[in-house]
Length: 95
Image (cartoon, rainbow, N blue to C red):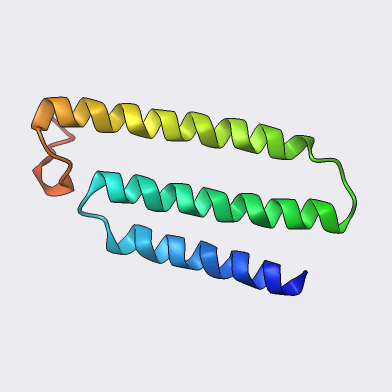
């Protein structure tokens, strides 16, 4: 079980590193954010199964992560229609 915990923590750190390095493209930022969410889901699953607790919180977590993903994709579609690309440097978010 400790190998899986170490692997999920490594996945979390690599997702954060990818999020920091890909800050120029919005789509790559959203993909790395979803990778972080998947690694957090794995860590929560390991934690809850270690203590034999119920997995209802995982369903709430998945619901929130799906709504976060849908919000990010709708923001991406809005910015693609407005500016025509997904480069963060071309966005003037303060209008």
